Image 1 (cartoon, rainbow, N blue to C red):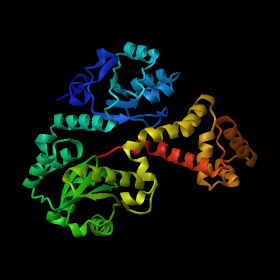
Image 2 (cartoon, rainbow, N blue to C red; image 1 turned 180 degrees about the vertical axis):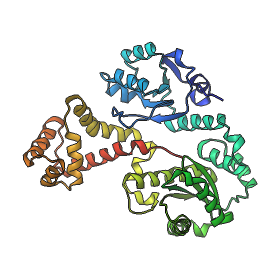
Image 3 (cartoon, rainbow, N blue to C red; image 1 turned 120 degrees about the horizontal axis):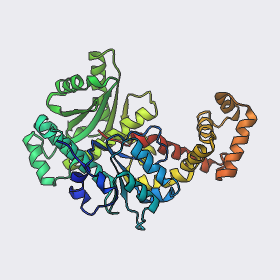
Image 4 (cartoon, one colour; image 1 turned 60 degrees about the horizontal axis):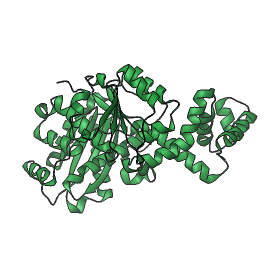
Length: 392
């Protein structure tokens, strides 16, 4: 059953949304959602996707906003969904004119609607139309909805009771990723066999979600990590030719907070992959400052920080065919050694010195200043983590 932009606009989350341009394209079929608040389209996957961005972002790129729309269209995105800013920014007329000409829908969201609501509403509807409600077991349907839907608390407790969940139990989300996505189903069965009645499982996109049932005495972080370590050891014995990574969320008292634990498990796993960590098990509490980078509540402020530094440098590099951002990355990776940076980039020592001075002159960033280095380092991590701001 196809799911079009027109049908999407009938969802409650889009009640106050308006189509500003490209209305003739609302019969396009979509199969997912992506967030893109960057002018770097190199790794962007948009085919069949609704692209989410914000008015404050497009306002920063008034001159290149048309190119942004063109890139989305060329990469076969089906629509652009823009969140209105606090100041009720209007989109530049040239952007709307191009979208209208391309019959590429541009949809404005009310400022009170957040991206999480849109992602959850659209993803849930796509899953429902793809037949998940008919093909998944009751258990799998329950946890799929617990993650993505917003039913009332009593409804979830009643449905959970039908699965044997008690109100004095705690649920903790584990997200397991094998090195081969085809292993997801056998790994899922292995988890159920290993923990029997102690967990519920769900598979999607080559990953396995494990909802671990815990008593109050077991909810401590160390206890959960110990249980996860035992599972990982058993998996490595059962599948000796494969490797696994596992992200762990916090335990919450309320069943309806399981989506938080799940989101945290996603973040922990994503960070582990991003950092190429040697540790196979990552707990959300161990992410330190990186917990902020994966928190949707902080996305807008983090984006401002990113745009003031990395975004500006990246845009300059693209326009002028320079290598300032790559130089900064390498300089950081080489522990601020100009000599090692020059060797790594196969250039002369004086070339790196020249580039660092130009970075200070062009962008006002002094890489000898520790505070500015910290801001830049966090901004680089924001840039790196954008593709990993995704869930199950």
